[in-house]
Length: 306
Image (cartoon, rainbow, N blue to C red; front, side):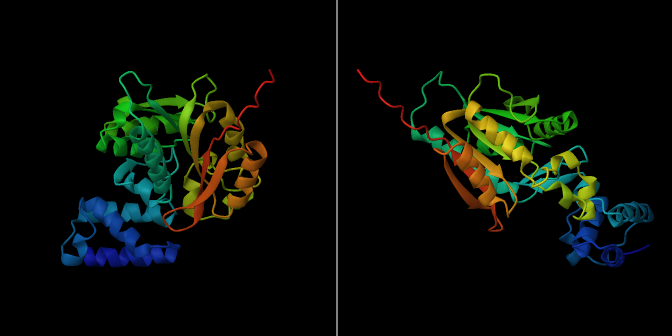
């Protein structure tokens, strides 16, 4: 029977040949999944013998990875913001850069909750996660605010155009005990229903259509609707910008994730539509300017002559 060390070596060689960008890490993660352990244990016990049945399952997972299937889909989850979120082809895989969106939105919410007294009966702060996918931002935010004991003062709305993505989002919310704190809705961006929103968070499709087919094979396993942003990547972002003035409160904030090369374009779109709003580009955890923060600032109304 093979040892851990031998299986990792075999897996690393195979995944290197197939073009994986992180072959050893992938091999270790797949073997750790089969053995139900942490990959850090392999360094301490490389001589551990692996049974034939486990080795056969490992072989199957390697074959899937060789074809380009993302590790997150094979494992069935992805670590995000300290959580293990379920992942499968119903929704986009959570990315580390989106963690910064969660942090910024959390900071905005917390600052509003502590800035002024909130007597009993005060309406909850409404946060909308637009294009929620598997519930990435909504669930992570709800868990973070629960740790702060602030969740009772928040209402979270999570929307997505894909019913299957909403179902995955519900499953993630149930798995982390926040399903009763998030309202899920199948919707094209935001419903215009008269409910004004305090904070909008969005990780919308922003890859140019013609660029998608030239990206990594792994991306071909993810839903194209969650990636394709039209000819220049900004069609869906523009659609959201068009709706923001109708749904965001007078002092509302929107936090959008975009491509690292789209900052100036998005700021230009905002300036042409909402010239009075404050707007800034913020770096993600890798230092790339992939986040736009907008805050609504209403121009004072002119006084009516007596």
